[in-house]
Image (cartoon, rainbow, N blue to C red; front, side, top):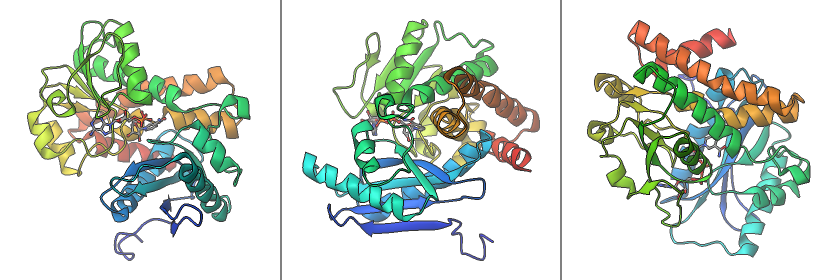
Amino acid sequence: MTDQLNGFDHEQVLIRRGGRSGLPIVVAVHSTAAGPAVGGCRLWTYPDWRAGLADALDLSAAMTVKCAVAGLPRGGGKTVLPLPPGLRLDADRRRALFLDVGDAVEDLGGRYFIGEDVGTTAPDLLTIAERTGRVMGLPTESGGVGEPAAPTAAGVLAAIGATCEVVFGTADPTGLRFAVHGLGQVGGRVARRLVERGAVVTAADVDPTRHVPGVATTDPDSLLDLDVDVLVPASLGHLLTREVVARLRCRAVVGPANNQLADPSVGDLLVERGITWAPDVVVNGGGAVYVVLRETAQVGHEEAMKRVDAIGDTVREVLTAAARTGSTPSAAVADLVRRRTA
Ligand SMILES: NC(=O)c1ccc[n+]([C@@H]2O[C@H](COP(=O)([O-])OP(=O)(O)OC[C@H]3O[C@@H](n4cnc5c(N)ncnc54)[C@H](O)[C@@H]3O)[C@@H](O)[C@H]2O)c1
């Protein structure tokens, strides 16, 4: 089917200029085969809106895989709000933009539910909720289950434990050296927890105000040259280019950033270099698992967190299968998805 469509395999993509804000809005619905599409809303600066569209297409497709791996009855979607370089939103225009986003989501008639992602926060979701009920992860005081960043970080920590067990023979990070790329909502939480557990952590963020106690900082490029045990990508996607992988001095890469491989061939290069990469679609599913289970399946906090912790088991299964069959971790995930959706 995909071939007949010249590579286009999304169900629907909504692109419009917001009526109030005048800014571009892209909502990509990749699949609703398993259930309504879910995916966060990214507000970021792009060289032009088409780059934002490309990101929305990639990120929504990854969400479909993420939901399938986690066994969630949901499909993949994503909203990207591509800001032109140099534009700073004042409070009024920001509010106008998120009201426009709410209208766009509502117009999709329940095919897509929106949540937070890079660049958006709980107050933005509340603005969206003024125009549509199709919002996930609202603050608890507004009747939601809260931001997904905490369960996402919990899932990442479970994935780090499983990866360390496979690579270093122990899930205990004490004394291991980590490099965290991006100290935002998820990267900041992961770095803090690793320090608490006795790891040696260095981090970098383009925003110089981001700091975590006990974490040494450097610039984002130099971080990639550090002699460490584990690299934790927690900024934006496509960090792992062929050039970057050739420079890495770590034994494992495991972190929350979406779409870490700049292209699929990078997966082979990581294998060639003996670097174990835990696929992001498995590692960063904790927020989606928690929010979907709590808000749509009425599952309690403890039970939902157990499902988040199970991300560690899936990572172990994927890495072990890849090592056993001599395939890449991406191929092992594709195989897992085939079996789980059969
Ligand atoms: N928040 C979640 O629940 C969740 C769930 C799944 C996946 N993710 C993914 O995890 C990553 C981090 O998400 P987040 O919620 O922490 O976002 P965030 O916006 O809170 O943090 C991202 C951080 O990365 C920094 N950054 C951006 N470009 C950078 C660069 N080139 N070098 C270094 N730092 C850079 C930003 O300044 C920011 O501090 C994203 O790729 C996101 O899509 C997040």
